[in-house]
Image 1 (cartoon, rainbow, N blue to C red):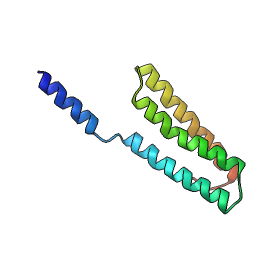
Image 2: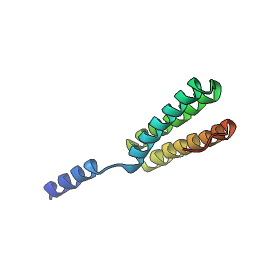
Image 3: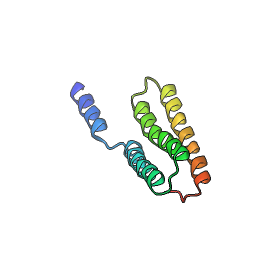
Length: 99
């Protein structure tokens, strides 16, 4: 019986975490957007806010992955959602198309 539990656990660990993968790709896109805004548009204030909010989404997803409880997981994912909401506000101020 123990062997089956261990094999199931290994399969869960090896399974791709789509949310984690997408949030990492999203963070990379945000960094590129930040660089574009700073270098091409000379926008310094909102670009920094976009960078902070955009990269914190991935950080919160990573923290949620190692949450201590279901409530902790929900809390961390809700913080990630709030950071996404901040991004939409920043984009509307910059009047940029959403990636």
